[in-house]
Image (cartoon, rainbow, N blue to C red):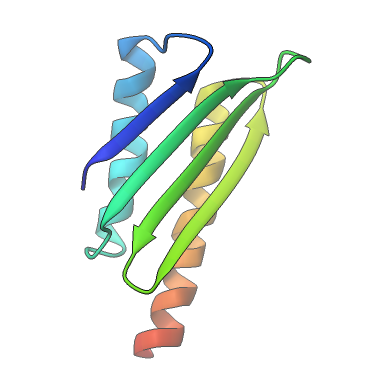
Length: 96
């Protein structure tokens, strides 16, 4: 799965990009037909950090947006919610 990361109005450092690859890459364990993954990083005026993750899967797109004090916390929150959504989607589609 190719993970496209877009940092809006700032440059993300390599450490953050590696963290995102590691955490978001784990989603392939739950569903191996993920077509694409887009991650948008935004700094809010109130010093919060927003992460928006869009997973392209056949028939659907799962989109999650979370705001937290750090990008790492927001990424972890997004991945946790996406794991639950993938499990529910698989149960609904495949009865597993």
